[in-house]
Length: 324
Image (tube, rainbow, N blue to C red; front, side):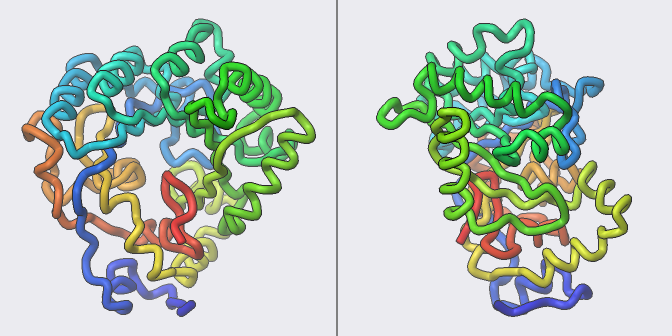
């Protein structure tokens, strides 16, 4: 694999490999970030979410998203994220209406939300709606998880995973998808996804009797809290250089932004959730109030910046895990 010097930008890296500017094809995935309210405040969170945040999608915005979704039949998947998306008062409406339109729905769940007071019926709702769950669990040991996500988070996460298994999630033949997400604990690339998945499955099965589907490895983006952590460690430049020097042109064809549009809690459109957190709008800085369907952003050029090296480093990274 060729390496890049730190002076090379992401745009010039694409040009160097004869790849040209990134362009979206069809919009197959609608990713909705319903806000920054969360019951956790994780060290690596690129959203800077937490219990004290107030940004949250309101009812008119949620209703407009559903109306546009109805006008965009090529969208196959609705991917709902946050914060803890389940804390948004319109989360269940977004799920129900998306399922009514026969869309696959993903809930990006932090697991502990399932055992929060007031969420006692959440698991049954997700199961009844056949929602796919993609859940964060950055390690299979308590020490590493609690270090990243807060004291007691691992224990509550394991409890939630057991409840999910009891409801059928992660069980072969149930049709209830349960995938886990791994993020490195520090400034390094994720290890190979397949090998790590096997180790996760072995440890979680032997230690806790837990089953799940896939493990998705995701590279930490030098954004928000993780960027602040890199600065404190004096490793921000080193990590950015690691990402740039690990550029893999084979990942570019599979980048999630080529088939996805991201919607913020206030209805603005972005090319991905990372661009959203950096306030880098789509080429046409539109909101959901300016369009009649999401089809209009197909074939648009995608806004890139140097954080995009995070998605193309090594084996690649996206919301769906390893790319190549």
